[in-house]
Image 1 (cartoon, rainbow, N blue to C red):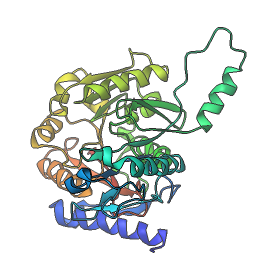
Image 2: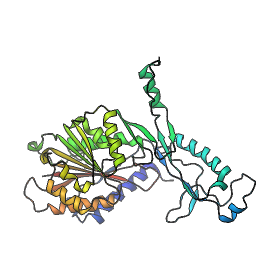
Image 3: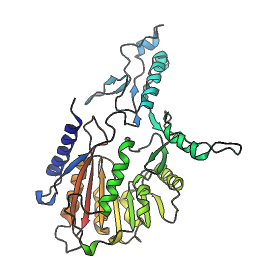
Image 4: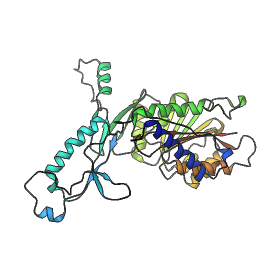
Length: 374
């Protein structure tokens, strides 16, 4: 087993090699890659699991045994790397305790009833805070005590369409349990804090490209691929106007609800359903020189149409958060090379790049790149 310090070093190397091999940039255009920021939890951190199993073979369905012993062919777990063969997993050391407890009970139930399944099943286990019920007029409980208790208790949700809830710093988020939300809650405050500091502070390396004449703080935020509103909502106290764009109608519905849960007025924050490729047409009233763009796209990264619009809009600061540093490096390279010959104030530079370990004990690394106009 690799030490955690070694894991973080190896993940930094992944970021270094991605920018060397996929960005197409000269070494002089890429700042020194900073050390990877670790997760507060290295085990029992993952808040979502989706194990699966196959239905019994046809021969076993025709003549099921009377014993409730787990048959050798039954594998409940995840695919082996590079194959479509399932590895049987009895317990997941990176999943939260409430998920492992529910998963263990479910495995026993599946074994008992396996011959009733006619097809394979994908399961969902989502760690959640309990959703508070509407208060009764007759209740005598202190609302503060009730809220505190609900934030300490965790439940496991297994219905894809049910609502999950979690707390990130002082903010509450609810979303459809089967939809996307970052699966390591313990690192979300460090991640969102880092993004805030990258926007409003000089580069952590001390090599900030911001000059005194550029020091006026941004007032507008655009959160592309906003999901349930993680960045838009956690960063909202620091901006006058915030807009989130997302293709998924379910995510937009969740984001709007999360703004209400956190008492953010609709005059300040809005969420708009639409392809991120059309994003800048919907925020045409935002002043580019005072606008920050946060990008958190899927693994495939940004398409050329999106990058073209970004270059035309030219917001002052771009923070690119990515679960695939290779496509991030590719996209950052396109942005920088497209503005290489521009005059002062219209050229993007890469100010900093840093990995975040959202998934300890795995090979995955998240990456945050900060670009500024100079």
